Picture 1 (cartoon, rainbow, N blue to C red):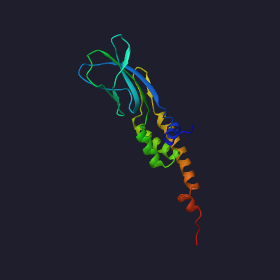
Picture 2 (cartoon, helix red, strand yellow; picture 1 turned 180 degrees about the horizontal axis):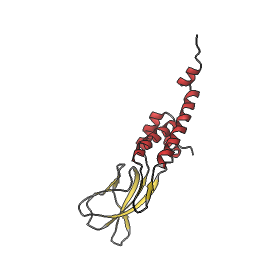
Picture 3 (cartoon, one colour; picture 1 turned 180 degrees about the vertical axis):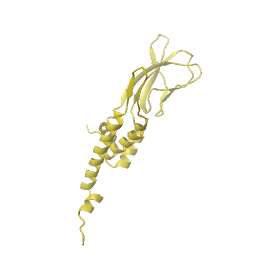
Picture 4 (cartoon, rainbow, N blue to C red; picture 1 turned 90 degrees about the horizontal axis):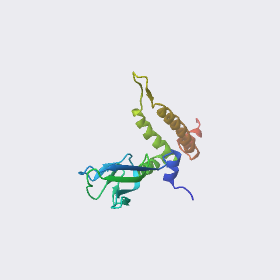
Amino acid sequence: MALNTAQQVRLRIQDIPAIADITRTFDGSASSFLLDHYNASSGTAYVPDTAGQWSATAAEFNVTGYVTFSGVGSANSAWRARYVHSVFSIQEILHFTAVGGTVAGAALEATKALMFDGLKRAKWAAPDGSTYDDTMALENLWRMYSALTHEVTQWETLDGGFESWAEGQGYW
């Protein structure tokens, strides 16, 4: 079975959807709760039934990372959510595809978005000797960006882009 374009882009940037399974408690006043991830594409929420077994509810999940139950649960009673999430929503993948034009172009657009997030990366050392270094992610993204830029440029040249037109021009 062939992958559709969005699936090819996700595979190319390793944005493989993952499953999360969390258990939390109601606070007695809210019906919406923040999940651990954004871009939940599907999911099921559960509450314990009278026998203590998990029973599915009609809760709704959205891409902003919230699950909303139909009513407010009793304070300190448990709820559980199993959902599928990814880094990019399907709308973002479709946007990258539209802007990038090809799977490689879409992967390049996704990489640019991740590089912007790279501004949040940090490296530090504490007085107790512990260290943290998350800056390699930006270097790896830069390598990916360079490789994808080269690939997209090569395809544009073969497809009659500006570079192929300019190569065929001579001085009169």
